[in-house]
Image (tube, rainbow, N blue to C red; front, side, top):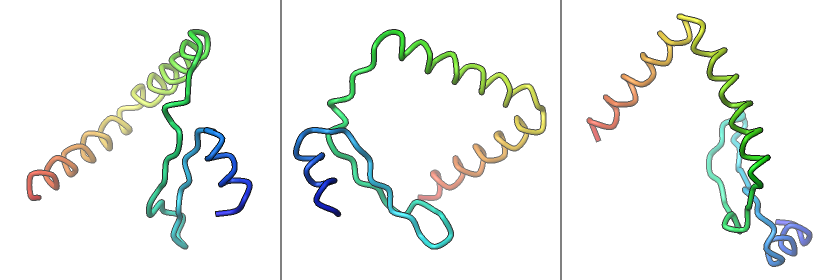
Length: 82
């Protein structure tokens, strides 16, 4: 970790440091000072609007719904096996 990052963390700057493998998959992450994040009502509303629109677009395609349900079934089966 570089000195600027250490200084920012010590100053209370919220951040997530992600570690990637050679294929671009996140292998681990470190979180710092996330309790210092505070969104205004306007920011929350804008985030909700953007998220809602993305959800509507995703779920409007039956193929996406089918793939999501298959993923969820596989995830639940994996959890039960553990």
